[in-house]
Image (cartoon, rainbow, N blue to C red; front, side):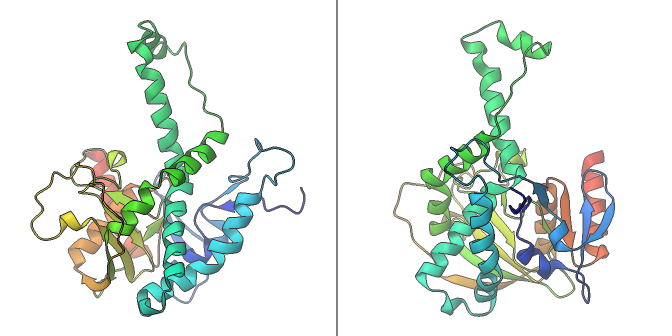
Length: 301
C-alpha cells in the first residue's frame, strides 16, 4: 500500500503543462467557487486522493489498476496526440486516432463533474418513485429520507457508458475542426476540460453528445481547440438541436484546421468555465480576470 499512487489526477498533468504561464512551470488558476486566484505546478492541481481507487473489487484485483492504466498509457501519450492533431495530423495512424478517441471518452467520463451528474440522475430517479409510492416525496421534502450512492457507482457508470458506445459513435460521425485562437486571444481549460454545449437547452447539464445540436469543445493548448459538431449542424441546420442522432454507420471525417474568431474564442472560454467543477486555468491572469467578470455577471443575473 505504501508504494501505491495516492494522488490521482482527474486531468493529466502532461496536458496541463502546456497551459503554464510563459517562462514558468506553474499554472495560474481561478477557483470558480471562491473566485480566488492561485499559482501552482500542474502536478499539484486537479487531483484527489485515492479518487480512482476501487476498494470494492475482489482481493485478487489491484484496486489501483485504473489509476495505473491512466498514468502509464494516457498520461504518456497525450502530449504526442495533441502535437500530431495540431501540427501533423496525417501522421495519425488509424490505431492512434482510435486511441485518442478512447482518451476523449475516458477524459469526459472520469472527472468529478460527470460523477456528480451520475449521482444527480440516480437521485432524480429516487425522487420520482412517488409514481409508485405516493408518500415518498413528502419524506424527501422533510429530509426524512436520504439518497446514498456508493463510490463504486461511478466506476459502474463509466463502464456502462463505455459499453453503450454512444460517445464513441458520436465522435466517429462528427465533423472535426482543430481551431486556432485569433491573434491576442487564448483558450483556457478546466477540471472538466471536455465540454458538451447545446444552445437548445437552458441548463448546461442537460446537453448530451447524442443530440444533433450539441458541440464538443476540448482546449488542446492555449492557442488551439478541438471543436466537434454533428454534420447536421453545417450550413443551414434544419433539425431541432435536441433531436437525437440517426442510427447510421460511424464515419471519421476529415480533420480541418481553421481560425476561430475572437468572439467565438471568448464564448468557448465562457462555456468551458461555466462547466468547471472548481478549477479554471489559463496562461495569464488577464484571461482569468475576463472570465471572472463573466461568471460573476451570470451569477448576479
